[in-house]
Image (cartoon, rainbow, N blue to C red; front, top):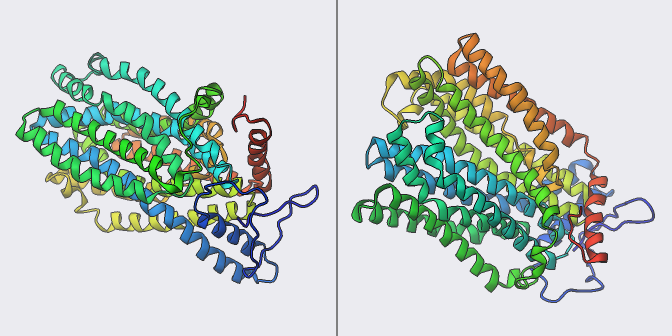
Length: 517
């Protein structure tokens, strides 16, 4: 409600005073979801468009509205992604208490195999975020369930291909030069993660489907309860039942399936999803190729980032003092990973805000959302960077007792702090607007043409070691962020609204999917 109205040939947005009572739409849909967020979003556009208010008054009022909308989404989303991270980490910790071999195997299985599948599935699920967000903003509720099912079909098919990677993980790890004993143990751990692939295939579309409707808190509650169950089951299965590595990974897979089933039950039973979930539809099997193109672009965008950091770790293993370099880099990347989980949750909230506003025809609100999330992101990153610098001398002792590692980590902390300041929050704009393919090209240039070659040059030729490798990574990160900031600054938000409306009008008039060939 309260979305702006177009007048004549150009899009002009009339101010909507707070006291104006908005009439109901001419063709109300039955079982309409809760309108709270649509009304507040329309009010945001009206505040930004109100000529009777001074610029300062508009900014203050709009900031308060946007902050409420953003944190309503961001806080539970951050909890969800942090708990997902903690579940994998706790499984690694349980495995590590079995012995050094088991710790190495679980670490290799998590970082070498599982992270690949996680990034691929999460990236492909971002297509749901773009399309469902825009459709929900335009009140095209009934198409959201079709997109959820279409994504689930596509990701499940991808899961069967990923299963081959898991099944043949041992020869793959041996090919990469891993010792036979570690590769064999890691393969056992990975076999237990095969059911998790298909949980990913359902979880990420479900998660994005709910986020597009500003329904985030239930996922946070479900994830929190599942974490408690996961910790209890892991202790029983690994230590009491003595199932070791295989038991640890099977419990992790089971925990993900608990999350999937609980979220699906919520969708089917909740009044809030009554208009967006109307049951299973054969439409889920149509238009898969067009949906695949956007999903693949999303996956490439995210995977190029994930692989970038994995390649840097492999490079560190080739340095002269490889053990010290790997230890210091892994500690710094773990710290960066915790902050990254906050950014992922914030990005998810921001992309929902942008796509909702574009679908609702609110260009000023979409642009203002980008400004607010960028400022909030910088504040959070600055606080994290300051904490890293303040604790640089002792931060490594949370991971190890080695003085040499502590000195190496302390030496890397200034670069880590700079990396945190340049976290890539503009991806939320790319997902909200559907620019995933374009951002994938940017990632190739910044990471693989600039970052990795420069890191190799600094690390090996100039003998700067881990600092040189991290410096190259930082250069690629800064270049990517600057390019995305410039593109965002130059974006014509009226044109983005028209593009979103065009997709929605095509579906409304022709009953075709929003994403066409």
